[in-house]
Length: 274
Image 1 (cartoon, rainbow, N blue to C red):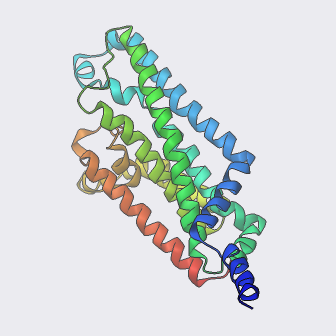
Image 2: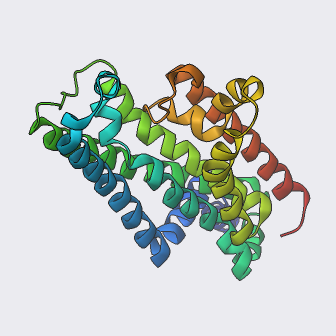
Image 3: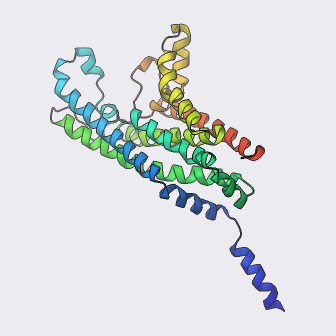
């Protein structure tokens, strides 16, 4: 009799939905999509290629710079210039990770299997953060080393032990990862690929130049708190030193935006139908 009751209990335990199993499921879906591979490759090309291009151009034209330009030249941020372009690819990937399932209707199957819903969102965020942080960290170091090699041909390169260099290289990957998580949250919140990508691109690429058109009394206090400017302070992507937060304060602001959007996405997932 005990054997008969033990078998159903064992079978029930083997079918139990756990966060680890949901995480493994999301990893399988993420790596099996062709768009994931192509988007990651595009981001790598942008991050490394544009950084190398800017490093080579600046190295060859450095002798034409004014004294002020030479004094403000930052070889580290120059080699990481591709970060500002790669972030859009990672952001699009983040949006697609959640909005794609709403577009195909597959989200209904996911939520049927995981009726508590929120573990699905946590799994998506975990998988995305793990993959993107790994890929972007490798790309950031590659962009730095290639860029410094090109700059060193004109005696402008620095080593990783230079002040702020390691923080900038690691910071570029952290910035990209958190910005991508904002994309994941936007996809889950808006449930539309077009709306999610448009919102992400607008916040990170359209809003900063528009804010620059505001009166200086407003602009000087506002621009430093925009997501792109706040996050870019960590790796040196903001050149206007008068309107930029300290590196880790800026990163904290970016994380704050991500936390608010993830909370909003979780609330909608929990309280509205797919």
